[in-house]
Image (cartoon, rainbow, N blue to C red; front, side, top):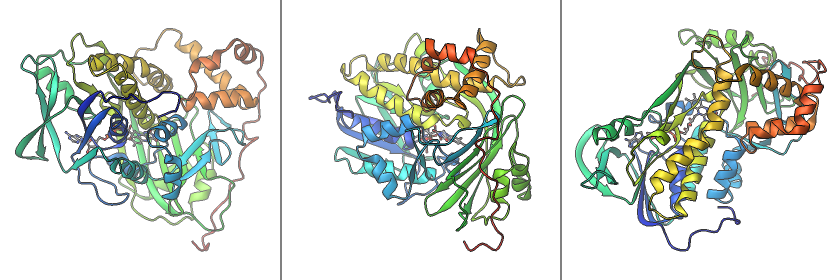
Length: 469
Ligand SMILES: Cc1cc2nc3c(=O)[nH]c(=O)nc-3n(C[C@H](O)[C@H](O)[C@H](O)COP(=O)(O)OP(=O)(O)OC[C@H]3O[C@@H](n4cnc5c(N)ncnc54)[C@H](O)[C@@H]3O)c2cc1C
């Protein structure tokens, strides 16, 4: 926690229980360990020792970028987290210094911008957080157990605990808790369980995008020095829909992700299509780097059907003692890289709500999260809704917002201050309002130099086929 916000001297309660031991649940348990005498984290999977992919997080084989704001929250909850991640093999880079990024039809200018960006596999990130959590003396981790339902008070006005079981059935046990946090991901069953208890069904917003991911790990070729550690080719929506990235990760490997909107992605039926797809990206650099590189494993495919937001903040009645968090509350198009950071911010918001005590925390928290989600939800869906085939209501002023956003992006390729603001907004360390300050507004409206889109392009480089790896 930051030194400016002192911790409560008396705990808010005796026992809190978090279920779902992925990124959100781990951070939530870390936050709650400061507010409760004891915290239990329940996870359906068995945790292996070390950074391992597991069944409950099928997205873990794919590229996971942690925004600067998310990294900052992790450092607050687990002081020294950056150092731990580095010690485990993760890289912490400056967002625009070691990142060659083709975005919106232009290469982004390179140079230090002061925003940290991490490069590691998703299992490594989760493993480093888990180790920090397990080192806390008042946290117990119960893996290989799933939550099968809520326990409530007789009048059902309060969730008082959960029913636990070995996955798939078996004898149940109950665990009481003053606060239960559902961090069980997109497939959370809280909507059904609450409905069965007599609460209204939570409203959901969906925006269908049919995003595809295909990811493969490669050896990072020795002697190949292109001047970047991350290479990203992002499309200029709506005309282009393909995306690709190479990220250096631990153990000197490359994690290569290819995919896109509305079904764009390498065919799962044909491994050769991976490289062919890379060749079809709007710039040649990724294909050039990859075509002779040596793969280390299979291609993993993932299909993400829709953005999903559950409006718990709108429910007319909601029990005390329960907080829904992370993907269980809202799950975004992964291409924008907001999921883990938004989960971390919700965990932090719960901590803030607990400063006023346990009483009423469920109501304060869900309303606060409803507000907190507005920015990332609108950032993700404004991008997606630019594609005409993506169905959904365009908010008033949608065309104007996009027009302004495009001009701002173009200004950012010419003006370092605008670039810094743009990146800070994207990394959620600054509000989008910063892009519309009176001075910026004037600059955006009066500057329109057609900049050379290739000005900051790295030289395309090919890995020599006989290169030692
Ligand atoms: C392809 C892809 C790429 C992504 N890339 C990024 C990215 O670059 N950056 C980013 O920030 N986000 C990204 N995301 C989103 C990110 O993966 C999630 O936002 C993040 O994992 C946080 O989710 P969570 O912890 O809320 O839930 P999840 O990660 O879904 O975890 C839920 C956990 O709950 C457990 N569980 C489920 N039910 C029960 C139960 N009944 N009892 C006990 N345990 C249970 C599961 O086993 C699992 O461990 C990506 C997502 C996808 C699909």
